[in-house]
Length: 322
Image (cartoon, rainbow, N blue to C red):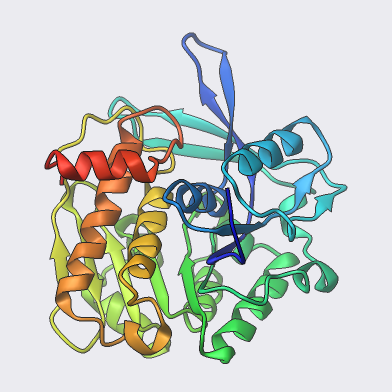
């Protein structure tokens, strides 16, 4: 359970994933949504975590709230919403890769108000935002305003993951404009290779990272699934870390577990402060990537989003599962 002011605050959608069951036509309802998953991952890694999500006053909303509370997450700034819960129907391919069909018209996650945002904790080390809520009107403007406020303070690491969903972002130019605006407010920008391939067809990861660093990010991290991950600061050569062998059950929540592992490792190594992040040496960056890859890998070895606890990560690291 949390014991003091939140170390990390996460804002964004909290939805329900409908995951295929053991026979056709049967689905299991599981808590989900990228920001929600990141918050769960951070809490399980032992970080005092607050979640800002608009949780519906219905069965699914109560499931989301109860699951977060059980993880020890501070829900003081999670409003009770009158709109219903967003749903995502998950499809899995033969390799366990996940794709999503979203049902989000008129649902709770996109209707932030100024008074709701004013409930954000004043004391925190990290503010993480991203995914669908960061580029879906009308609430996206409120979330970006919050990120801008904490970026301007200078003492809070602002972290961003666009978590691109092409089916919801049909217009490339408009999508790039929205996502680049968010990147300009973040010190840490993390994306997958699939994200940047869709946003910037024809550009390399290094070219995209250089562009995002010019926009204002201090650290850009690109994940490459089975090929590992790369970190770019613009002050030295990129840092690459390989993936680890994984017996994949599915990839639901893998990127979010990576994000939680990365943020948690940067905080634990005390290199998360904005003044330190841009000049972070290769050693701590490599270690943070390794930590994030391990957390994501353990999540992939069980069904759905089910990030590991700190004890599970420590045990895996001790047995050489890196």
